[in-house]
Image 1: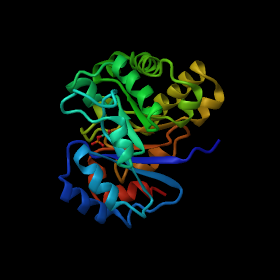
Image 2: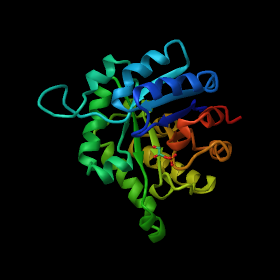
Image 3: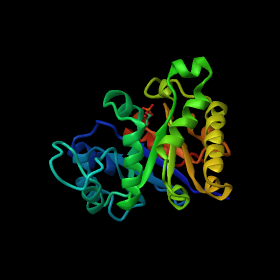
Length: 249
Ligand code: 13P
């Protein structure tokens, strides 16, 4: 089955509202590609101005974080219904920065995946290993375990709408990209885990991205691999280079 590619920018904690609007204007004509889903996952404060700035374009809106309750006494948090009303379609869940810096564990991440689906948001579920696990050779077991935990009680129909981002932590923001073969090896393994948990049709439908120092020069090779259906891009999503990634061929 031909899966539609999905190229998403994860802006992380970058871009004030005015800078965000300016970036949207800079990228507007560069990110046009009818064959690819293009998503900007932006900081909470940029959601409303970016929703306005991308109106009438091919770009879809994503958020970087939310909390699992709809409303109430959760100081500093933002809810799925708030994101939904603002026009958000995709939501990043389980990024290694949230896991490592903010202590999010797989129980919370699983609850977020289920809540996102219930609220009509499409999760971009991140997984990936540290350099220590890569060196120890146990990275595949680790990632398989993350996927199983994070998708507990998630249905096959939901997984068909899911995006999984494989992001080796050692490749994030370091300039060190996994080779296309290393990325393909893990993305294929993730698809096999989904086939084992659900069925082959579900595994064939789920879209799996690579993320970690993806840029205009390495995107084409990574995206040529059978099991790599897109990219989750940090640093290079903040520059005109993002347009080159979207138009990788
Ligand atoms: P970089 O592209 O800056 O390495 O970041 C990758 C990432 O973490 C995307 O979520």
